[in-house]
Image (cartoon, rainbow, N blue to C red; front, top):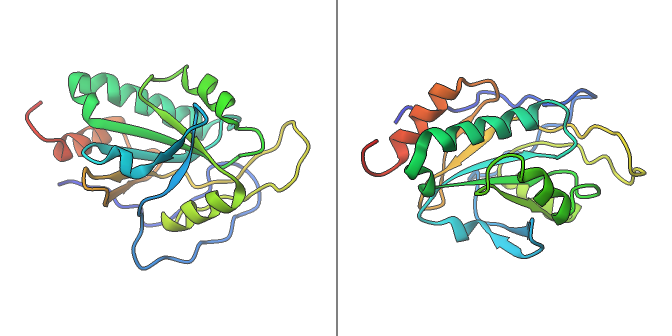
Length: 187
């Protein structure tokens, strides 16, 4: 299928190296967080679609907006087939990324992207499920601070099973071909 698997996890933003997560027996699985409309959203709601899952935050200066533009480009290239893809952006900065902030941020990219957030405990549970990392900045005053986080994109198949991990910097053409190989029907 041409799936890409990340050999290592690298932090996306500057700062001290986050600690590596304990690898669960099975990476992935269902979860429920709050969407950008303030409603509960379960990953299982995307069953039947190919999911692109990315962990980031709206104040990220580099990796996150670049990844969101990549997702926007992929969806545009897929045309009608983009209806078979559900992009999810999980914020790892719940202090600043309220549902309203996520909604405003995602409006710059593509209308099908769903933004998700939760409290620190919820986010730690979900990031452990996906063996991704981030450093919770704790109780910081509102303002400029960096949240270290991994930069991989997770591909979850229509049955809800993790089928690939795409490292940051993978060429858009390669990601596009990977997605096409997992979508039903012809181009």
